[in-house]
Length: 245
Image (cartoon, rainbow, N blue to C red; front, side, top):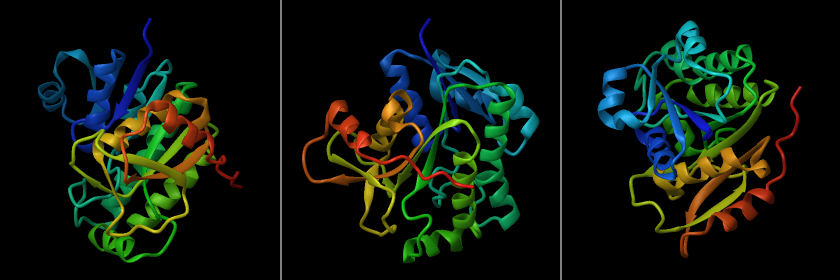
């Protein structure tokens, strides 16, 4: 039986592109969404659509399965201005960006999930910068929430990968080189990557032992689009995330 991948937040942005790329590769795809009809309209009948809201722990527990190869958490992936809770209250923003991830992790643990959780995060979330402060203005408390959810996932006992993206753009995927590095950069206005390329690396990370227990960032760079083998070599060079206590 083909492996199945689960995407939490798959009707827009990076999550949608992950679903589409996985379908193109021929694997089974399961999506957890708030609006089933909208998801079926966007993704068609080739995916298994399950209703669930990350702010509702019970619905998440009922939606997840223990036999998925990986769970992608792409809800409010970068906290961008098109995400949930735009200019919302700090409480509403935390329910989605922080508590949402916690609910998914706890549901996975209760289901004895043995796959990998792939978390979409933000470059420089643990460093002060003009861009991070701007995001924090748009979504109050966002930086703290994103830092804390990374920390929570690292100490959850689950296999994980945290992929940090710079500014995401809707440029065509596969047109630029991709540089994968240790998570040490600040977020700047000039650091960008296409959503499709970000989705591609997240999918690769979900399938490779080299990405287990690692936090890394990626950027578009000059040059031709890399092969999977070239991306894998970059992932292998990233050291594991330090253990947190």
